[in-house]
Image (cartoon, rainbow, N blue to C red; front, side, top):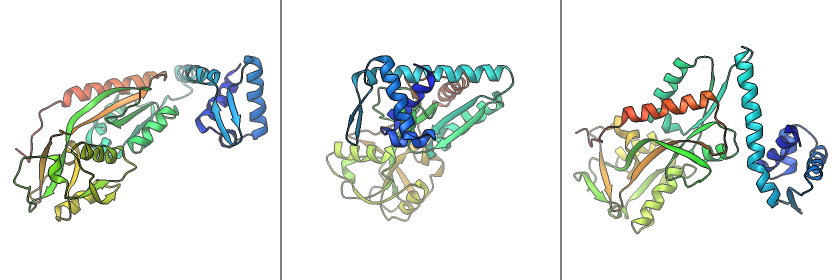
Length: 304
């Protein structure tokens, strides 16, 4: 058993396809299949259940997968650190961050990190929380930021922003003079929401169902600024994270606390439980934790 075989095995599992893995590895499918057959012969056990076009792991394959990832990462990290110490390579750090998370929190963390570690190549991959989770699970990102609740036991998480989601209505809306409302009071409203490829869309819908109704989603868009502008014009209402919209409070909108149920909003920094963090990843994580502690402060509403 060698690292090349393990890399082939992990790539197949990540794609759950020999043909897709072969394309990704720039090799023929027959050569890839032969390598895996050799590995299975050495281990004296099958790693895959091959049933027509369907591919799944055997019990042995499920056991091997986390160890294979750990061995590959340990080797890669050791090579990176050795080359870095010899001055032959810069360390690389890949982080997945949802678009709004950078604005809310990570711009300061990134700046601090770059000032302290200018030689590290920092790659920020922007994507919705769902995408970040997929990338972390595939070990394609070192760290990521996700919106809670993220029910994935394979991720180690640390909350960096703990706030709330609030209802946003126009100044002329019948609820505009209220400071807080029960979520069920919005059951007849037209909702403008962030697109359903974002985790926050699912969270809003789940909260509405918890309050006893199915939200009438009249419009979705991947740009929250567009949604916010339409709400200002009185076309509908929205629910957005308070830290996101707080800097844009104006006399055309009102922010309302949500009750029964309440609507906490948490942004967490995370990494795969089986991941071996590089020194750069550990430092970025620590800076994020420090910044989270520094920014903890009471929430004010409507500029008060």
